[in-house]
Length: 110
Image (cartoon, rainbow, N blue to C red; front, side, top):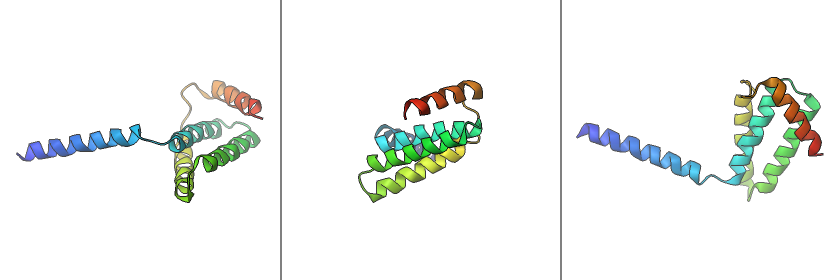
């Protein structure tokens, strides 16, 4: 009986976790994607001015996506947390390819 309760609790936790990710807002998705990109650029020592420009534009976009002050704070926190983690590891495609595509994307966004 005890094993059944533990298994049920674990299944409930896994199902609720998937539900949270499935109902995630555009704000949080954008925060994660842009923070991962900025973190990769920091890890690979891309041009600092371009990184700062990218981060400023990402934070402005987060503010526009937020429906209220709570979401604005939530988006900033998610961005900063993911940025810190992403800046500690190399992007999947390697630094040379990543920096090239990052700098091109920042130039095209101007």
